[in-house]
Picture 1 (cartoon, helix red, strand yellow):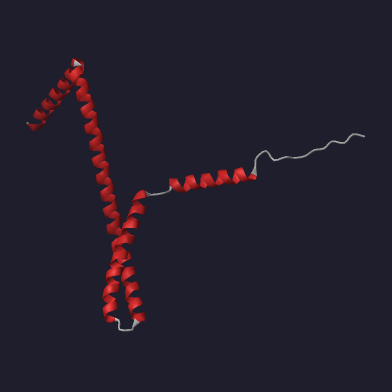
Picture 2: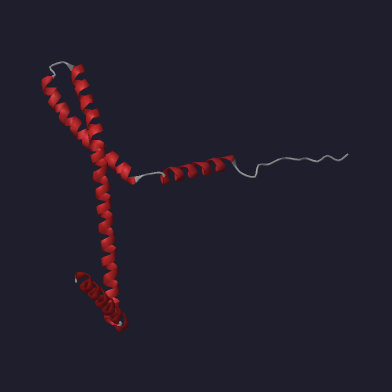
Length: 146
């Protein structure tokens, strides 16, 4: 009598599958990350924390044992400052990021222009191309002026 042993072995390790899923979830979460929003939230939290410290100092001087009233005032100030300062913080972060992007682009362009000029100093053909481009630009400017 012949007997066959058939054992089904999994082709993948369950721990490896879980680790791959975890890595994919982390990648997905990172792709949804918005730097401007995070920076605005961080800025808002810093402003509100500073405001809460000042409010605590002010409330501390006039509470005279009325701790519940002091906490109510502090929380009211915290929520009001969150509501009022959220959009200005977002705008400030967006303007800062846009300014940094423009500065970086101008810096990259200046570096490329410097490299092209160095090549043009050693190659007459490149210098001629630059000269022609500058002449064409100047003639367009004159035509646009009149």
